[in-house]
Amino acid sequence: MKFYLVMFIFINSLFGQNIESLVGKKYEDLILKQENCPIKKVPISKYKKWLGYVQFKNSVIVAVSSAKYTFTYAMQNKKNNIHKIYMTDYNTGKIIEAKKASYVFGSRIMSIGGDDIIPFEKKEDAETFLKKQGGKKIFSIERMTKNFINYLELK
Image (tube, rainbow, N blue to C red; front, top):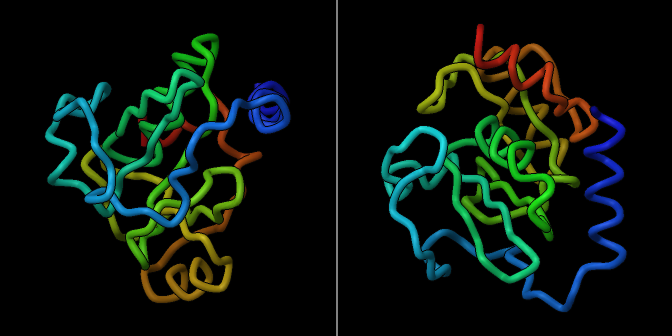
């Protein structure tokens, strides 16, 4: 499953259309046609620091209430022409590419869904956060498999 997710993202980056990138933007910069997370059914505007985004090839952007649920949503919709997956950098609040992020696992900080992975653009920021907030490990996108995401949900 990990291999397929990585290959899916790689192939999409090679053959993706000229769709505007979300990198560097913030939640407030986007015009979204949704109010609630498709997974948790909570208002996305309340969880700006946690949001992940799935951008489809038709330019539709779906905001999801946390990194964990963003990967869940992407896996559920992997056949629906996903262009890119983005996360919100926990430090800056800016949108970053999911495939380039460093994810802190096992910290004391919880998302709306409990245990989660916390994305950072810079690995140094992830390392600092891990030390301050009692995180257990830093992962890259390759670790974001269905089994791992399910583990976070059950924990």
